[in-house]
Length: 208
Image (cartoon, rainbow, N blue to C red; front, top):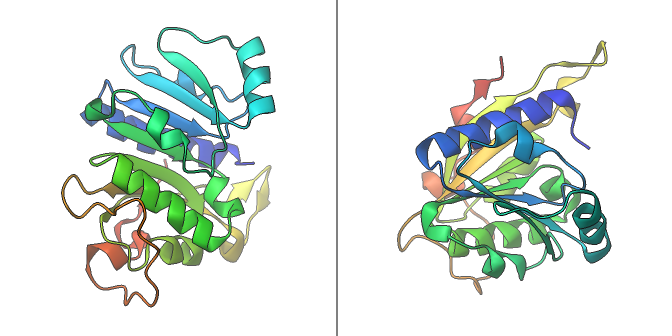
């Protein structure tokens, strides 16, 4: 579960994308009863919450769908939900707060590959420790590092050691032939050279 500092950083990255594409679809993976729609709504975006079946039923009951906000019953880490995202030409930004931290590394890389193939010109925002973030994108063509945010070093008044402090990363998906075909297996042994293998922390900013 992300803390308040992480939430602020995720929101900042999503707002930056919406400033460029105000009618984009925001896909919130495994957000439970999260209230991101109300924090980020610009009056034009579309919001899709992707949740496992039982959690989706609870969200629909307590937060019924509206014209611009919907809940989809799919596994957030699966390959099926990207095909159900509407209006991809208007832009798509995926919020994966907590999701890529829980997944095994190969599954996280596979999810990035599926999103890159399905949402050219889109973005994905996630939180991870720096080494984990670098491993997720290493050697992967079609991913361009974007906004990076380091949340506050304190939580509930207590300092958090640097080694245990996740950061919020944004990766953009190439809008051309560099996008990864959905069936491609993750490449191994990336050298870290070039856009696809660059450590996302190379373009770091700080939350204020």
